Amino acid sequence: MRNHARFKSRWGFILASVGSAVGMANVWGFPYKVGENGGGAFILAYLVFVCIFSSTGLAAEFGIGRRAKTGTLGSYHTAWLSGGSKIKERIGRYVGWLPLAGSMCIAIGYAVIITYVLKALINSVTGTLMTVDTAQWFESFSLTNYSVAPLHIIVVVGTLLTLLLGASSIERTNKIMMPIFFIVFLILAVRVAFLPGSSKGYTFLFTIRWEQFLNPMMWVFAMGQAFFSLSMTGSGMIVYGAYLDDKEDLVSSARWTAVFDTTAAFVAALVIIPACFAFNKDVASGPGLLFVILPEILQGIPFGQFFAIILYVAMIFAGTSSLQNMFEVVGESLLKRIPALTRKFMLIILCAVCLGAGLHMEPIFKWGPWMDIVSIYIIPIGATIGAISWFWIMKKDDLMDEINKGAIKVHGNYWYLLGKFVYVPLAAVLCVVALFKKIAF
Image 1 (tube, rainbow, N blue to C red):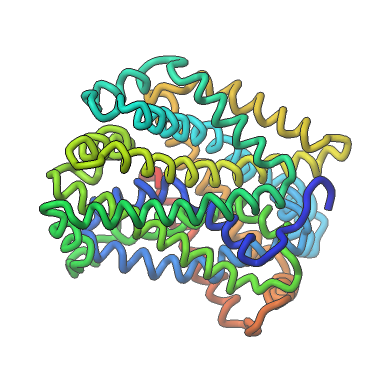
Image 2 (tube, rainbow, N blue to C red):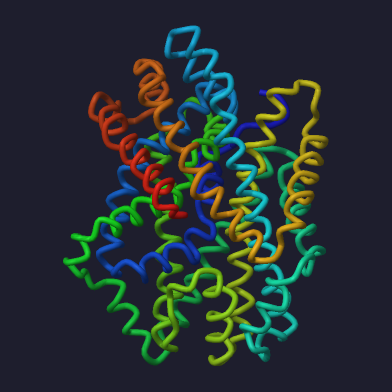
């Protein structure tokens, strides 16, 4: 492959995959969904879906990338070409553009969110965040055009610079960012445990209210959280599979990715939910949870400034590692389609596109609807197209050959049927619910 190296170690690959998966969906999405959907019952349902999706869909995305030796566009072409007809081969040349566009579109909005986090980090370091009315502080930049433009440029350019060496630089940065993320949140979780009233949060988290299992939307939200928390968008994880050695066990690597991703979600919940209960705050507050409620809580505890700094450092690492993946999947496909393009010039193109669109949507009333459109329409459709491509279009023998390449335990019909008749229908259900109920997961 041109313009990048392979991952040098299995754990480097897993940490990069965890970095892609761990992001705002874990830091505020998981606690938010747990708070809205009954605590322990939601967690149990979420774990069921994580087990199914990681072992089938995530492993398949790794596998098709490794088989094609390239990212989104080439992988879809490979899968549809395997289907064995000229019509499928032609469709395969174009069908990957939608999930690829989804990665670029979500990167544009995601960069704004990370910019907000960088703003919070800087104000935590200066101490400003410890004395302001947090609601007014958040409104001062989230409702104004170009209010965080310099920081926005730093986020986009800084993330793109980590991609100069392709897989090598992605691996190196995530070997640093992901361990620090976990350490920081563990420190915060220990601190929150000593807050008066935090025990109510743990009770809420770990008490299973059995009546919640009768609520179909609880299952739908748990499914959506598991699906997108694992970054299974029909695009993102494919490119990391393309950088993976043939000797690696795909299903095992997918499961380890899920273990660390789920651990990150739980650690974030152990910080946010007990803290909200201790201060009688609403855990289901979306962006306000990170930029209004949590800063207000930190203002009221000893050494709050220190804990604010480490909180936002961890969130910067989580967000940047996810943004890395979004940029890399688009950039790799550009390199594949345009052989004369160099990696440096590709990164310049991505910078121009991301900032050209993103700088105009910094206020929350602009990037919020943008992210809703991407999450409701583009991402679910793209993810469903991916699921169908791997398990219904691609020849079974070709997929199984890749899944079992390097596998310690050979996978057979059970794995394939679980993917084809459980994973794919569940992806389709999420897509239908998103489209017809206008729900952004």
